[in-house]
Amino acid sequence: MTVKKVLFVEDSPTMRRIIMNALQNIGFSDIIEAENGVDALEKINGYNVDLILTDWNMPEMNGEELVTKLRNSQNYKSTPIVMITTRGMKEDVMAVVKLGVNGYIVKPFTPEVLKHKLDTILDKG
Image 1: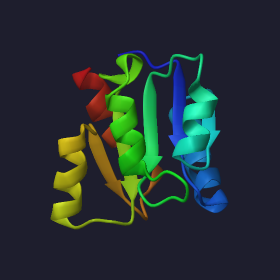
Image 2: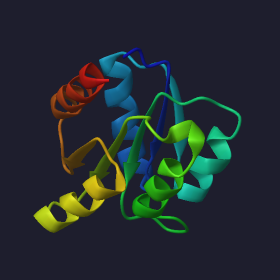
Image 3: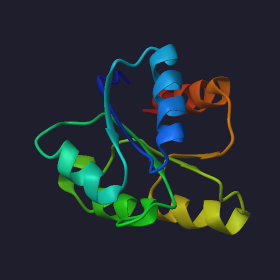
């Protein structure tokens, strides 16, 4: 699957910078940053996004709510979504998999882990 535009949603400015650097190092250049689910939905309005990475715990609209909204949208029913979070319990992973995320990364993570996860998900697509 060819990814042109990436959205990533993260409320922590430090984590946003880390993820942005990792995505750029992997080779993504067309990246939309958002700080929560509400911000994300506003920023992708009118765009086609090919890959979404989202944090779980965020103010205003968390990652779980965002994934639910995206999966209920015709445009994003099958777009690959990766949840990036500090929540690593098996129950948490199972909950978001049921919502329709394609992958799950527990913070902290390395750029190599991100690249491997994205390669795995995108090769499936």
